[in-house]
Image 1 (spheres, helix red, strand yellow):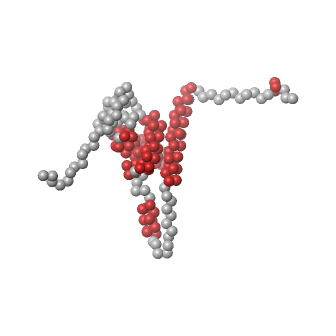
Image 2 (cartoon, helix red, strand yellow):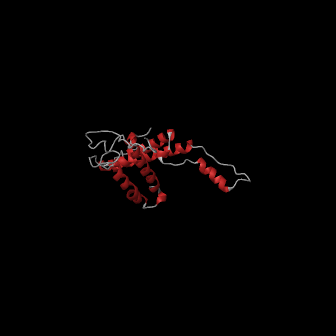
Image 3 (tube, rainbow, N blue to C red):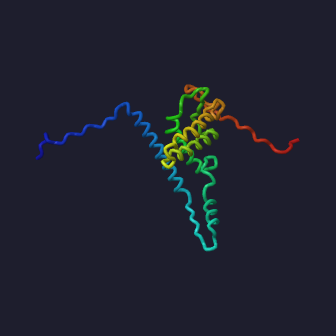
Length: 198
C-alpha cells in the first residue's frame, strides 16, 4: 500500500496576469480569423476543378498555356464573382473585417467618420474592403519581406480608410453616432442613355 503523505502534489494552476488577457484575446481573435481564412481558401481550392491538359505531339506549349489560362477564373476580385463563389468570398471577407480589421482599425464613429454595421450591403464598401483584404493577404505573407506590413498600411489601408469613412463616402447616409445606428444605401447615378430620344 502506498503512503498517501508521499503522493505527488497537484500542480499549481496556470494563471495569466490580467494585463495580458487583452493581448491574449486579440491574438486568439486574429488566429481564429486566419484559420477561417485558410478554411475558406482550402474550400475554394477543393471546389475548383483540376484541369490538366494532356499534351499531344501536335499541340504547342503556347496552346497548352492558353488552355490553362482559359480554365482559370477571370479574376479573384469579389465583384467579378457570382453566386456561390461570391457568397464564399464574402463570408471570408466578413471574418477578416469583423475579427481583425474592425477591432484594430475601427476607430470611433462620428459625422466625419461614418460607418455601417451592414457594410456588406454597400457594393463600394465590399469592393474596397475586399481589395484591402487581398492586399493584406499578399503583404503580410512571409514572402512579402519585413516591409510588407508597412507597405500595406501606407499604400492600401490609409487610402481605403480615407474613402470608406469619408463624410461623402459609401456610408454617408448611415451611422454617424454609435448611439443612433442607421443604414441606408445611397442611390447610384442612372446610366446615361445613348442616342436621341426626341
